[in-house]
Length: 330
Ligand code: CP
Ligand code: NVA
Image 1 (cartoon, rainbow, N blue to C red):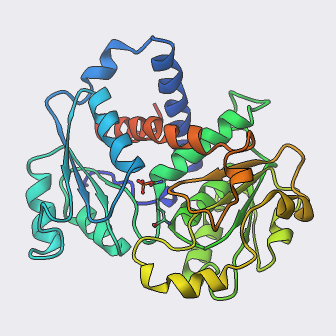
Image 2: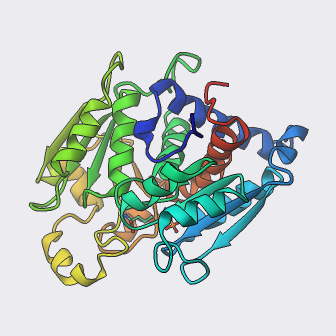
C-alpha cells in the first residue's frame, strides 16, 4: 500500500486527531522551555519537503518552512510561477516526478481534486495546505488553541477532554469551517453554523461532517441556521473567516451585500447570548467586515496564539505523516 496522506481531518480517527494535537502541545511546551529533544532537529535531516503553492500564503508557508527547519530538513518552496503545477503538465506527471526526489509534498491548490490527484500518484505523503474543500493544518492549530484556552478536567483520557463545549461559526460555509466541523464532531464539541441563504453547507459536505460521528462515543452535534444570534446562544467560542475566499474575488460586491449583519461584534455576541467568557477565533487573513476591531483586538481574541499554533501543528503533522510514516498513535 502507498503512503498515508493528510487531505482532511476526515482521514483521521478521533484518537489519531487528538494524538496529533497533543503532540503539537508537547513540542510547543518543550521547545518554549528550552528542552527540545535532541532527536527532533535531526528527524528530517537530509530530506527535502516540496511546498507547491498555487495561491498566496503567509501562515501556512512560514509555519511549514519553519517546522521543516526545526526538524532538520530542507523546505523547497515552489510557487505558481515556478513549476508547471496543473498548467503545462499533468498532475500525474508532476506528482510522480516531484515525489521521486522528495520526502513529502505540501500542496495548496484550488479544486480539492488537484491535491487528491497529487496524493493518488505520489510515492511520498502529501499534506493538504488548503484546498477549496479543506484546511486540515488550520484545524489542528485551532484545536491546540481551544485545548489551551479550555484546559481539560480529564487531561489524560481519550480525546481532548472538550466534550460539552460549543463553537459558533458565523459567516461563510467554507474550507476552514468544513475541517473545523469534522474536528468538532470527532472531539465531542457542538458546532452551530450561521450562514446567509445560499452560503450554507453543501449537502455532500454535510453528509461527510455528520458521518464523522460514526464510531465516536459522544460526538459533537452540528446545527445550522441563517440567524447569527441563534448559533451564538450559549457558545464558548465564536469563529469566523473571510467572506471572500481566494478565488472568489469577482463575487466581492455580491458577497458583501449577502453577509450584511453577519459581522461579529460585542453587541451581536450579547444579543445572541454567548457564554460570559466567550473567546474569538479566526484563521487569518482577516478583513474588518467579518469582525469588528473591538472583538478582534480584545482580550477575548485568540487569533495570534492561534496563528502561532500553526507552527506547532505543522511540526506535529510532519512528524506524524513524514517522520513516523502515518503511524499517528505514538
Ligand atoms: N490561515 C492561513 O492558512 O493563512 P495563510 O493563507 O496566510 O497561509
Ligand atoms: N477561506 C480562506 C482561508 C484562507 C486561509 C480561503 O480559502 O481563502
